[in-house]
Amino acid sequence: MKRLFIYTTFILLFCFDFHAELILTRAIPPEGSTGVDINSRVVLIFDQNIAEGQGVCSLNGTKLVPAVSSKMVTFTLPCLDYSGSYQFYAPAGAFTEKENPSNLSPEIRLTFTTKDRPHPEARLFDAIVAPDGSGNFTSVQKAIDAAPEKRTKPWLIFVRNGVYNEVIRVPESKPYIHLIGESADSTIIQYKICCNFLVNGGYTGPLEEAAAFGAYAAQFSAGYAIGSYGIDAMAYIDARNFYSENISYINLWGYEERNYPQALAVWCTKDRTAFYNCKALSYQDTWRTPASGGYRQYLKNCLIEGNVDFIYDNGDVFFDSCRINIVKNDKPTEEAGWIVAPSHSGTKWGYVFKNCSLSAENPGDSIYLGRAWIAQPKTVFINLQLDDKIVLRNKGWDSHFGQAIPLIFADWGTRNADGSLVDLSQRNNWYWYLNGNDTIQGYSQQYLSDEQAGAYTFHNVVPGSDGWRPDLMAERLPAPTLRAESDLLVWSSVPFAICYEIRCKGQFVCFTTENNYRPANSATDYQVCAVNEWGGRGLMSDYATGLKSISPGTAKIVRTELFDLMGRRVPENDISTGKQLILRKTSFSDGNVVVVKEIR
Image (cartoon, rainbow, N blue to C red; front, side, top):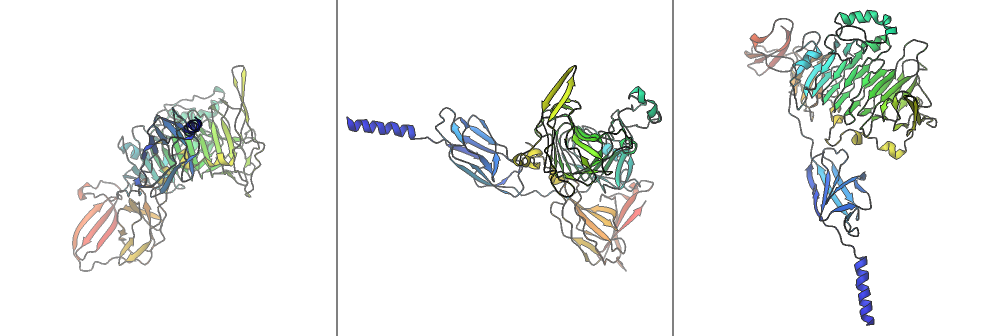
């Protein structure tokens, strides 16, 4: 009996101490996979229904959050890079059997490699806008009007240097419009319009201010804002997947008058809009972000200038290395300005300013980082650099404006012009507003820990579940290396380039998909840059020197062809009357080719 008792006890102890192991029946991607898409997720499928257990799952050391459903757990991954090597790790016991928590998942390690970045097909710009008539259009809006609807890939419009006095309207039916300017300083779209005037004439603002706006109202009555369709923004982008670079968007009302009311320079209403090296200049409400919380916007190396709530509305918006500039009018009663006035609802991140700078036009100009407008505003400034003119209020944020208590108004790593850290101890966290006769009060997060600040990355905020990568649009392709071979200007192919821009003495000549160009005459000041698949122009090459003009001698002409500046063949009898710049390509019997620019 004694031996039976000991044996029975051993069996019972064994049963209580033994833990069955969940079986991993499938992993996506499988261990050792190659060519994995950069937008992939990790999916684990077990033999039993599961629940979360203990331990941290990670990808290359970055913590992942699991989403459990029945037998399956899904991990949304941080943004992956092309040709990258990754290791997923889940510790033993990260998951348990739902009906029997003593059954634990095993340790899981998965390694995989993402696919190489695909090379785009060679192509030229779809349209060129030039004020001198040398392009396809003299108006930016006419080039937009001529673009096809319902595009699924970029429609590339190159805008030559010049001042375009017009409002811009991109309708919802025209996604993937890419406006690429020649130079942000010299490619300017501008118009004078504000919210107090109807397109068909008439003033709609406060009666006590009507006299001051009388002359301007008369201009509207005369058709000054034709083409704006009742929208007060200078540039109104109502389509997804819009991209722009190297263009200044100026609302002349705010820029010249330096006064109220609202005078929007840019207003994007839809998801997935991006800007690189652009400028937006006005006074009040310069930049309006999407009204929907689920929409994203990305700005890199841009300048936004204003004074009153000049970045406002909703959406997850990432300002990457942008410059914010404060301007004021000369009125003695002018208050301190406010950068943001958010109305976030349904957003995860809100406004994120990362590695941006804050400057002032005049020494001593003061500013609040922002004030709450509607709903539950969210704004953070990470590594904000102040110049030696700006005065950032110690509170950082204004306590009262609209009808909202912010969820988070915070800055981290803010530095003075001399590089010293700004004292954040007095940052405001108390806010209030009136709701009828009631005063609503509340508190907001005003500080970020190092760990919290580290979470505000491009990869976390921007790509989302669809893997949107505007950072690649803003990527500058390397400069080609030019060399002279006989009478040709030659360069090696630049990876991921769709075409190349030719410039002579700093002036635009044409685009080509070839890796060579034959100058029309003796030319010693040529440069070339590569263009990426989104129309982004890369780094400019050094000048090429020592090129000689070609002398065909006794060679006979084999054929003559005419092309427009985008490289498309133009029949001789199809040349329209009036000033038009074309390229005449003459091929000789000795193999030489001469390309000459002509105005027809």
